[in-house]
Image (tube, one colour):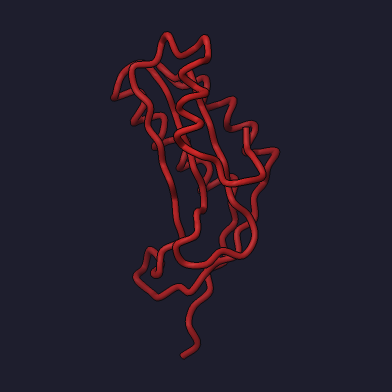
Length: 126
């Protein structure tokens, strides 16, 4: 499900709404992760190197499609050297009701972060 160029969320939504599975969708949620200028522990970050296990990503797309209420899944994950503000990933989940879609998106993004990507953050020189 990943593409080589940054996707358009508008195009993803339009495409998804034309799928047969769209008849069961009551909600789409989208996530756009970006490189921020500080790490989770609050230390400054100037950029990162990001690598992606594409095979595992495809497996997890299949897992996400099996989550309760989920009908449509899209994912794109960037790779290489990224600067602050660059896109890390786009994820879209379409499903039946809000609680199912929120839970699926949260779980899917968490799996991507823990099982698919490897991030090496760069810090400013002291």
